[in-house]
Image (cartoon, rainbow, N blue to C red; front, top):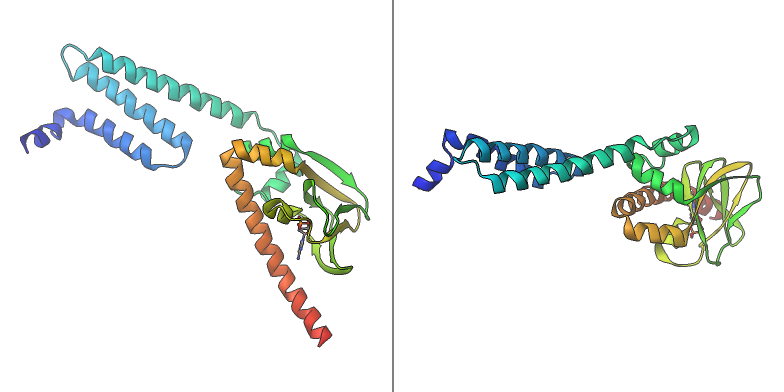
Amino acid sequence: MDALMTALNWENLAANLCYAILAFSYIVTNICWLRALAILALSLEALYFYFGSTPPLWVGIVWALIFVAINAVQLVLMARARLGVSLDEHERSLHQGLFEGMTYVAFHRLLKSGEWRRCDGGRELTVEGQSVSELFVVAEGMAKVEVNGDIVALVQPGSFVGEMSFLTGAPACATVTTVGPCRIFSISKTRLSKLLQVDEELRTAIHRTMGRDLVYKLKCTLPQAEAAQDEAA
Ligand SMILES: Nc1ncnc2c1ncn2[C@@H]1O[C@@H]2COP(=O)(O)O[C@H]2[C@H]1O
């Protein structure tokens, strides 16, 4: 009990504050905040080791400063990566739509791995029953989705094409054809898979985005299917 009271007394306030901040930094999930809090806590620890012990506890001070330096360098690198990202008007609008919530840095890594294309109407993006080698995002324009020759849906701007086979590994469940001039972002699925294997942040963001897009498609498709059933009855 005495030891606990001594540990918590006012003289040890800096040390307790430093370890409380360190403990809090373990709770936060944002890596920037984690590093910033670690820098604050470890700087306080260095001060405590200097002023709180006679002679100063140099081993602790040196290691605290090394940890501060590592975290500071990482923060600067992250800030530079963030500031180095510049998106053009089309990329920004895609980010604000389909990829909303994805960090600029992760979005930029995705963009760098694929390419933008313009195409006219009539271009087949996927063919029902055939394997799909690319994942597409229709940024501008529309595409029709056909199953057994029947149009079952329209792909709206800001939607994926080919995400279902990407997620399941199955062949394309539909033929998707552009119905007018389109601006499309495409990325090789092999390349995307490799990228997602090493980039956890992007993997989480892509899966969340695909999930949201699938929900949207399902919501749009159900009324269309109901209307078709009513017509058939
Ligand atoms: N009901 C639907 N609404 C919108 N897009 C669809 C629908 N059904 C299939 N697709 C798209 O058509 C694509 C065909 O290839 P995938 O199965 O890989 O992925 C599919 C989806 O991207």
